[in-house]
Image (cartoon, rainbow, N blue to C red; front, side, top):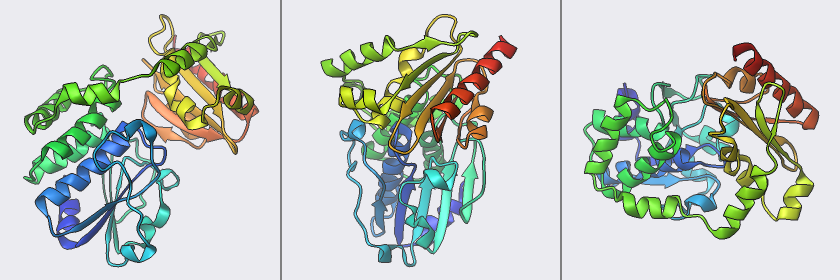
Length: 313
């Protein structure tokens, strides 16, 4: 499955690895894991990681991105990970590279690289990168395995989501055998300070319900300013406060930023991806996102989710 991408990696001496902006554990894990795999097996290649940073994953080895000039892309290979559409990629200079390749597990939207492998049967892009290493007979060191395991557990909800399959556990065992220290990893990944606990409590009290019991939170720019938090931390960071509410199968978190309303859509039972796509977003069947222009558009999305829930309940 990965032969063409492996051939590209062998061919190019400079490799620059991208992933989507506002990275989650899977984006960061796949990016850093791929870097470590290439460096472990091809130590003479120059490998760089680029994109915006995330304070949530500062504990990860090599989490500080490289600052490289445009000239680095001349004659280079750019690898794009965990990204369904070009607009989501952090640092659009990948187009300057001599060759581009993509590995992704999101629902296919379009082709925008020279070589690509898209497979929605994987719970995470980290799972795909692990499969790439196994298929191509590449060594996995502890650093690579830890990064990949991080994305695997975060995108599978600690192996709770129904995207988790027997394949997931087979690949997880490969990473464990490479030396992942789960105690150390979980100590960093799930540590939460008291202030954030208080913040989650405040957002729990903001939860509202539509007539068909779609749960939602809407947070204005003014509320964010009063709380002293940024929109991106709230958008993904607080959507989980609505998970596991009895009788709620669909939930959505709306967060105003300077130029858009960030929408995080989730479901425990239904395919909400077409609604995200309708509003310019994408993702997975049960976890998708989009950015819309204003509150009225966000409420139109909420109406669509309510109609979905009502029609399928």
